[in-house]
Length: 127
Image 1 (cartoon, rainbow, N blue to C red):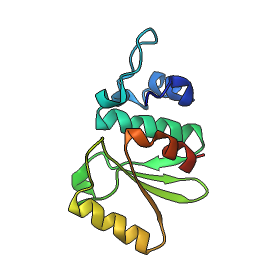
Image 2: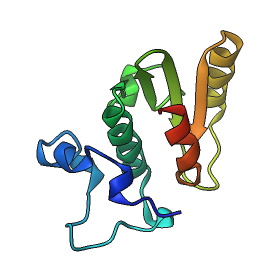
Image 3: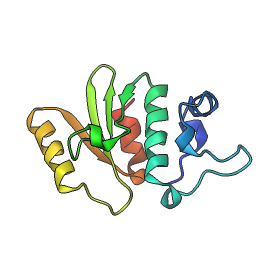
């Protein structure tokens, strides 16, 4: 599923002001990479840009050594807290990641494992 830039309000501004350097957005005259060509980092920045455009604040641990093993990729906060582990197609959470996912669910928290194919689910969860 290809996600048009129009589905990501705020992405151009985020790229311009440097918040999404790692997004590696193609120039406006080039098409977005197909979903299967996205890196996990590009996928993460796509989710972050969409979340911010909907009023979500986010936290991402940039140095994995500063967090417990398996800590989710994103913690999103607005009217509730959402934990998100981002994976590429065919990839599953590691044992440590699954342990955190199970702990959050047991504690009644909202936690998701999202892949690029889950874009509609991402949009629904962060609407």
